[in-house]
Length: 211
Ligand code: BEZ
Image (cartoon, rainbow, N blue to C red):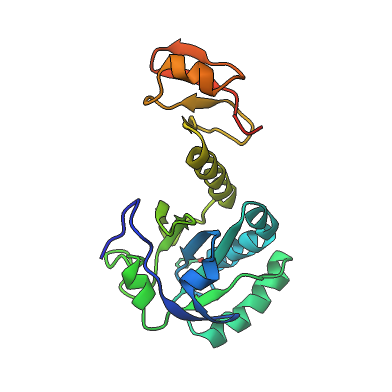
């Protein structure tokens, strides 16, 4: 089964490094990041989970709950977390799912058989408070993800969920945003009192409305 943007994220019950969870109960009304890694005790994954732990405060500020996943056992997760904490100078506080029967990995399409029959690839899903999938990225085992980019995307998703704007290439929180095409320039001037810069009739910038 493959998941597409706008789909409802499948719920699941799982064993994790912090105890048993029901995914929807774990999320509550928060945003969620669910991300898989190929295997415990591997170098790139160690840096990825360490970086996520170091950025835990940034996720919390944005009201985002983080959940990692691999097909390794709870026992392996527990041992590996000690190594992550030691080598990445952090404390992993978020749960890591032990998806030994691959049921969650299969539901989310995290196993790409032509990459590996056995292991999950580096899939990452951002899930909104409405439980819909807002973003999906997939990286190969050889390339660690950029978790600052994940935070940047969350900033964009949360902003664009609230205002009739979109964010341009390389946008960062605090920079000017784009008025969506569905809003006329006349209406944009009313909606965005900080001003609208019309570069082309279809390319209109306004200062970030919630700053
Ligand atoms: C890693 O996390 O370093 C890794 C995992 C699986 C294959 C290659 C690298």
